[in-house]
Image 1 (cartoon, rainbow, N blue to C red):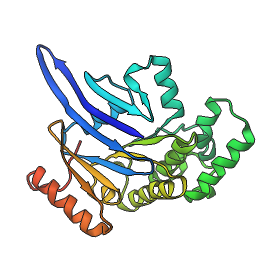
Image 2: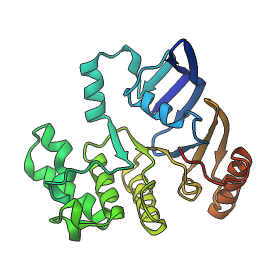
Image 3: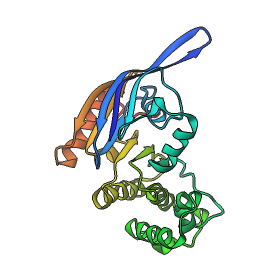
Length: 252
């Protein structure tokens, strides 16, 4: 599904060069829910931006379902983003002038697809994430958790190969955060969705199949969820307590 090999990325500040990613390698299989965590400045957001091709990288390879992203031109990259990637951002990125239903339909409208199957799919996703009752409301009229679940539904409209989620619970309270994470789990269970999530929240990460822990631009450790979420959460809290000098969560 997604293969990252020996990925390196750097930036210059004046005459100084700083390495943000140092030989990063990992794979994500179809249907996995994987989180990336790490202290501020560890490179996790840079990694996500390289995978989505929003920023360039120096060397290495990113292979998405057999397509090597570095070999694509700008037009082809745009097509990959529109058709094979789904995005969920911390700030929701919903269109204020559209209803919940219309926001979910946007990816299909862009491609000028037939209305009837578009509507049927949107309604199904709204029901799946328990937001069908607010379908005709506008983003300003609903809660943060409902907005983010709307964003998750929108990200799934084109049946993407993978959803890239950047701090999807960062602006939410604990109850809303749990609802959003459960929406991802439902998508994984019912749609075989593949989710790659950058997060600072150990509780959210504890629902994932795996957590890639980053430090100083490198993979520090990979942690596997072996079935007991409470045990997994305790393991995550302990490793981040050590990484952050006693602070359980980072603040990227």
